[in-house]
Length: 154
Image 1 (cartoon, helix red, strand yellow):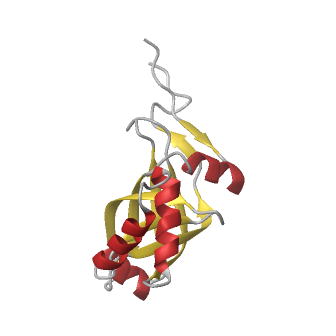
Image 2 (cartoon, helix red, strand yellow):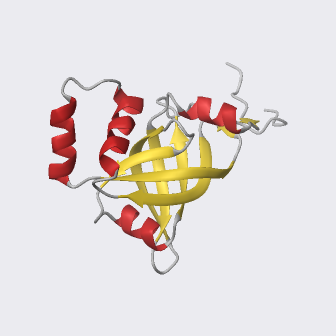
């Protein structure tokens, strides 16, 4: 079997968003108060304006960190761990209830499609006290895959 060669495809914003849309496994990195990094696995999607959206809770470290330092990085992973991935850096914000309710409905739609009972879903969002994290892409690396460097020879 031939060795797998790494790839790094530079893409524009439209291609980046098309790459992200079907992928929902992400690693979100924010900044703690001392400047160190805080990373957590999340489920995310892309809203109609091309922003990465993630459901959370106001008291979670990721939300607290973004309120203090409104920037974040997201590594978007493929379902296959060895599949392509990309890192996206951007401006981040936390949207709280009640403004977040319809945004969280949109979030659910881009992740899972239609809900069987939207009224029940909206009640659950409010009862749980959810919030929405939104990241506007400002820069991103190439869409990459792992493997040997292109000039590697066995």
